[in-house]
Length: 196
Image (tube, rainbow, N blue to C red; front, side):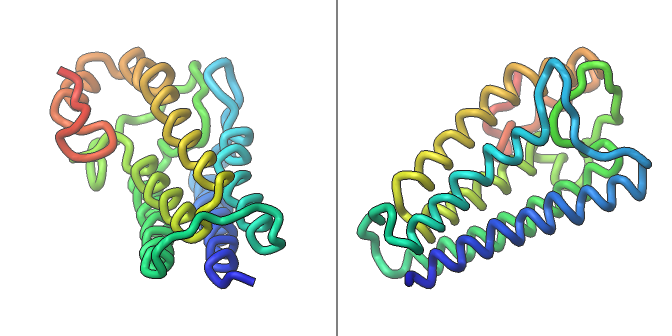
């Protein structure tokens, strides 16, 4: 059985426990309300399932021999493991930096504080950036069609959600303050994707 597939599966479980479970528990303790939002602008539970599903299934199919893995250089496995670990840590850091404004999904009626400190000083969506690192790590650990498709779908869906749902919501709630922040802050990496 491929050891990297076990590492990938453990990585998804740790991501779920730490970045969803523990962070949700912290959020409930601080606010008295769970972080999952289901409204006209998105469903938080569905987002979590769609994000993790391909990585879990890809790892299990790799372990059982149910899906062919791509031939890759041996050094990519350790790189993938490093990206997975960094992705988990960076996701949690960015989530904690959001404080009580953190949630999964968007409720168009909800008004939260705009966070522009910590990792949000240079990047508007550091949680997503960290999730991209995690997803790429999963692909390198388990290089098969399902994990690659899951990663591509993650990037595409997040791009659409950020541009069509989250950024318009922030502009509607915070107006010129968020426009000014968006003009000087990259979307996923510093200086790239600033809205002029």
